[in-house]
Length: 308
Image (tube, rainbow, N blue to C red; front, side, top):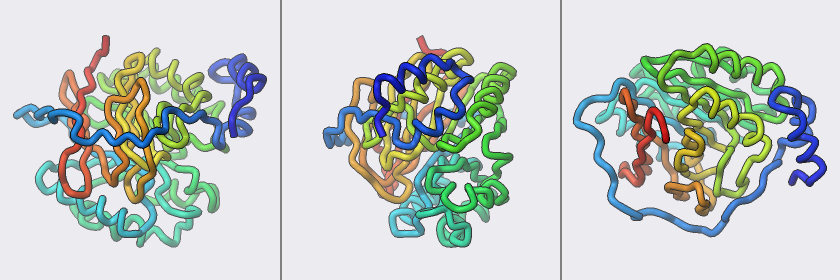
């Protein structure tokens, strides 16, 4: 569903916190497609080397995983192999954890079995809800599931110098209270690094494109409080943006299947491939690495602690 001019003007006039009910009407597919040319940017340039010193924190992110099919297992195997050589203990699972309708009885096939080796080694997955997850019981069983480590439909946790903020980006979310909560938590955080994750895209060159409501409501908070990174899925591809007003937007939705992705003015790298992202956190930089099912690095970018 596209937002017509009248809807957009009304929406914009509501301000950051006064749009809860209207959001549910608009969100669904309230986006505009960006450049949809099927550009694959693999092999675009040399891959930057990681520092020799170990990071203060390493985590990985992946989304749109929960099919239980071959694509998911291929990515899971690559995650496991990467862990053997580059240990991590956190996975950001950015929604659509159980396809097609969030049926919790599938949890063994779409989560516990694919990631069993990581789970046995104590790796913790921190999930948020995608649009497919809320189709059964509004995702309540997933919120309560210990393996997803969710402290609610939106929550925050801190590891080392990084504070993570998980959002419920669905159309039926309690947006009024969630935004009040996010504003409060971001304002009180003294973490040098702030990472927000949710299922739906904000800047994207995939089939859903730009998400204008999120640009109007979330990105001002990111800029105000210095959020350096937003992670999402929904688009079944990989895309890393340049820093936009201090925030890098990372799509890691190739966790089980792929769709075409193009390139936009904000794109640093995009690829339609099964993959996950690894993030190495240092005091002044985060290195973002895209890794495919062939266990090869296909992208690496750097996020500075304070962008110009």
